[in-house]
Image (tube, one colour):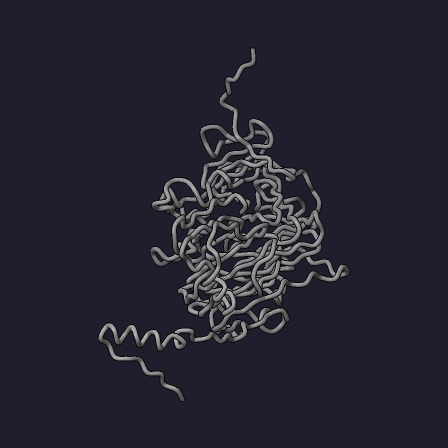
Length: 470
């Protein structure tokens, strides 16, 4: 007779299709993983002696006295401590990477309008450009030494990070490939990240990127000071939008590699290098809630109007990061993909609006309205008016309203921030792919109804309207 009794060691581990790696699932959990059984201490974090001579190393992602829900840390049990490296050496500044977005910086600029950027071109095959060398900053706010702000980058790469790791001390990095998968090795284990997914590498974590499909490009949202969180759901309840169980965290994986490595550190927007004679990816076991993770945006559960009108686009939020102002986000990460549009007696396209937010959207795959192209972005500055062109407005006024499947085979990632962003020299002067929105002229249909309006006003006892021309 078959037994259906599960032991205390049973667990759910995801193995996504086409992904060679397995993952733990959840968001904000206290995770634990060991690549060799028995290497994770039981009942304590700092035993006098670790099994097999491993070194215990702690990492915090918050102050020690942060409230428990925001208290982030991890303990790693590794072959050598991170302290085992040579002296730091200053690296030259990257010409296309920026971290200081204060207006006093002559290398950043204010733009009041709508901008669209084409995708960054891939490097020549004769030029080897890895993930870090291929970071190209688009815009941002604040600067990292103040622990408040953000930066938006493209990345474009055609080479693996060979015996090189990166550690960003300035902030968390959300990375969304648009073309080509990223094979990512972290201190906590490995992740394969495809277009349609994003990963988050939190500040202070070392990682290296290989390109299994050849050249790759995509988007990077970097935040200074806070961390990404799941948004509160309010009256939606306990489920919907991005569910915690759909986030994936790597399993412990390590290498015995005593070849030369370079670890590149970013701190205060500057790059430094430290050589070492062994791999930084030698963590045999770890536990904690300060971890890297990934998420497939196709798993997002959409919430919308089932009757009429639009719900605010905040219902498309996957993750949010708090600013220092109570109740105000630093940035929100959104997604749009295939869903139903069923609203009755409603102007269904995005209505004309001027928001207290800078809105940015990138097309991962599929087709969308101009000027959006795969791998590029569209950006609307705070309070910049935007909406559909006249022909779309006219069509939406008269279209038959029936349930419609929208964004078919299409996926976008969006970033929305109340901060005023400054644009970089790279975008405005060197990229060669930026265009400003063309001015639009709309017919004042109201004027064509003056005779009808005046008849109604007269019947109601009001004065008639008079047209002023000049």
